[in-house]
Image 1 (cartoon, rainbow, N blue to C red):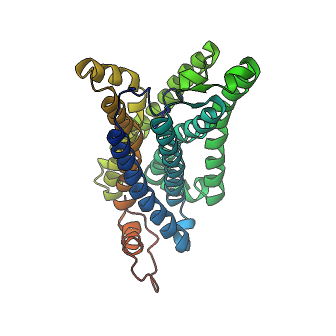
Image 2: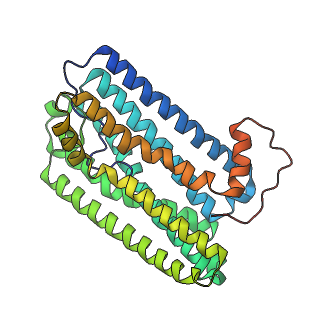
Image 3: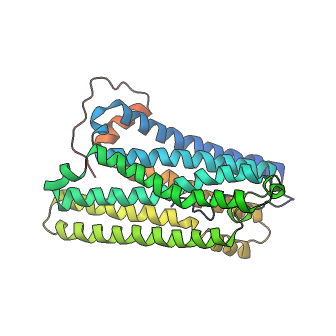
Length: 316
């Protein structure tokens, strides 16, 4: 899940002695990476929007939703990173408003990967029912379900915050961290339970679809073999998303090795857990697809794309 409910904070307390040069250089690196990744993602969205055939394929629709979700998530976390890195502390309510969309988009990612795996499974294992089960209307209904599930998981946290915390706390300045703002033990327990449930459901689905497709692939079906590789990539992406779950332990491990480099440690962990998964999604899913890649490259290089008629077949 590319930033968990727990640690979408994104940054941790900064050392008071961190130099201005460090702040400027690290902020610049994050901004440049964010602009590059969002430019690539925006080009993919533009490619999708320009060709009708992409809009009628459930697989492309789920992929482009993943891209849009990543764009929102990356924009929010980098904005919060800059606010926290530059000002160190921000108002509780402002912090909460940044954390909520980060959590929503983070939880959307594994659910989106789950349905992408299911769609892949249907196309290979029960192809005769594909057109019946995987329609454009149902695909958008799935996307709505993804957002609804994430909202039902996250919005109660905001309600608990507003109803249980004092006005003085809500208007106070804090280091913007999930556990600093949402302090209720109920929220923490619910968060942990939600994470476990999400991961169990996603991994069981990936395992099931992978082994079912693997069985079909024994028939030497080319599409089945490609689908098997796609499911493996889904698993790889979920692993990247899970880095945020081990973020606290990973941070403590690095701090034990480099106790005098706290600022650098927190910055490194942020890049690995928040930016790296966003960077890999376009490569894993967009660039690998031969049909999509052909037209995406033209838009990326500002080439002419008139009189192009993409094929209907999706290449894994």
